[in-house]
Length: 437
Image (cartoon, rainbow, N blue to C red; front, side, top):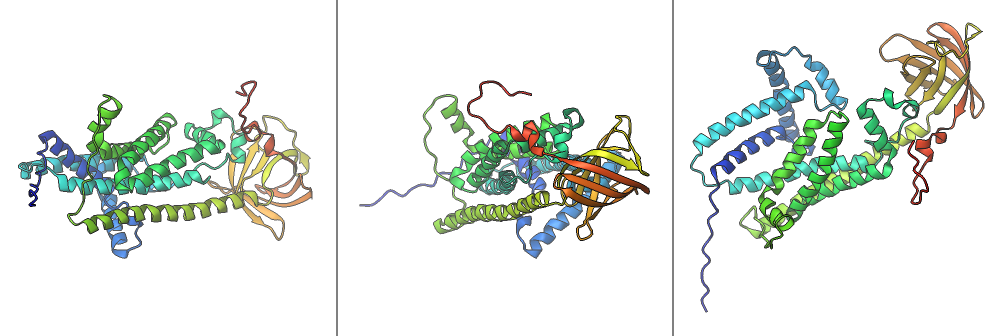
């Protein structure tokens, strides 16, 4: 019996507004992530292209800033600030403005030259694949650094002594995220879940929905606590929104209008079935490799940080009992800017001194373990203090040496960090009263 030959269905014609919006989004988001996530591939040509792309913007952004926006800004500092964690620098904002202008101009030119195009079905399919992998390459590392206590470590010893009023909004957020290990872990797991779902084509819509939920919370934290990753989190939410746009009507029918939703067939990338299977395998493998690399790399760094913190000589909070300069005892007056109140050893390289008055001083620490000596220096001045130390008892410390050229002798005792309520309160299913202090 002869079968009726199937007539291929011609893709629908997109509306003019849809075509214009796609052109703009395609150019804008491709500019922002042209080299990402492919810069993760250790292939010399790919790395060279990434470096060339970045160097192009390194020349363009300062030129636009000076000659178009007439800004007087030192962009050399922006590179340092970006390395220190700020992604909302003047450089980034000027670069984003360039993205917007270029995307708008390209959209106008593209629309004029290609105005008879019915749709961009083929280009849209590949654009969605790129967006999904781009999102996954961001969400998976974001999740891993929270699963391990790397992005939000437990509050440092100096943070335990810092008042709320002395901390910045961002510092306060970092403290409460680090103090709640379970919440930080949960946030990391959800970001991981979003990233892993996004690499599987059939689960991409679910992954994008999870991503929007998680990153909307991150965005509000960034806005509410002035964390300088606001632009980045906004772009992640927008990218996830682009991924769910093809299913937006079906989602509205199911969740809002209570209508029946029929399943849709997946839109293959290729005509040959085996090529589509290879494409799916590649996307899943990309997610697995990215997950394995970040788990290994971040786990090792987190373990090293824990070891550095716990095994540092003299680690702890040391309360000053007696402070002598030139063999003269300095009484513990709250108006004395020289006498120490506490010394805090955070790691093998960091120490904090809390004077009787004024702000705490963050110092660079260098140990000579064989000679039981250490040196304290300030980052921004020539001030130096050199001490020999001895521990007659585990919780007693005696320092003898010179501070800013003057002979100094300090006797200290160790405070138990477990006495702080933030460390000792723990978790309780049953609470007869609210421990809200």
